[in-house]
Image (tube, rainbow, N blue to C red; front, side, top):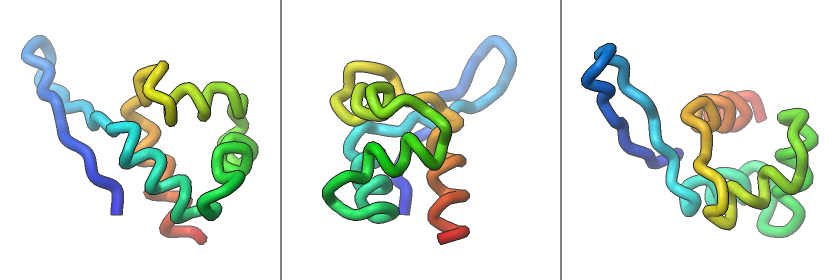
Length: 77
């Protein structure tokens, strides 16, 4: 289960899903195991392992689309 919260944009009325790094780490670990999940996830999403690591370390904001991508991967596993 991916936990997150929504932010409402007052300008255009669009809500954005905000994923916390703890939820990102938990989802990655569920998908690919506790060790090596970052490299596996990066390969599956066509992203750099360094970027995935920065999301997990909280150095980069996790894009709102990431929760949707992880949910899709969980459903198709």
